[in-house]
Length: 122
Image (cartoon, rainbow, N blue to C red; front, side, top):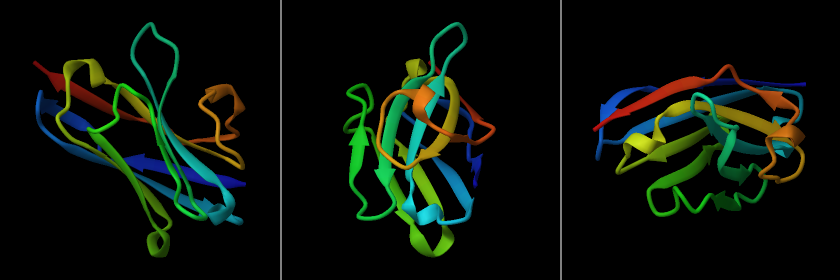
């Protein structure tokens, strides 16, 4: 069982930065891939980025590549999503999720946090 808790969302202006955190706990959390997804009202949940806890390989959606950076702190069991040069279209609820292998398909993730709202005003 893996427990995930997000934090760090908020209201910012276009061009600003935010850092989201995903604190993981539970058995063998270091064996999971941790991904960030986002969901805006009326849309499907969208893959944003992922990191393999073991080895640290990272993956990004084209829409955020070059603006967002995913990282992990093994000592704190926390994954971060640094979001720079935010755009109004980045507005969504952001979720972190975990499973054993990488996928951009949200349906394949077994564990989810509660979500954190990110709102970017123009």
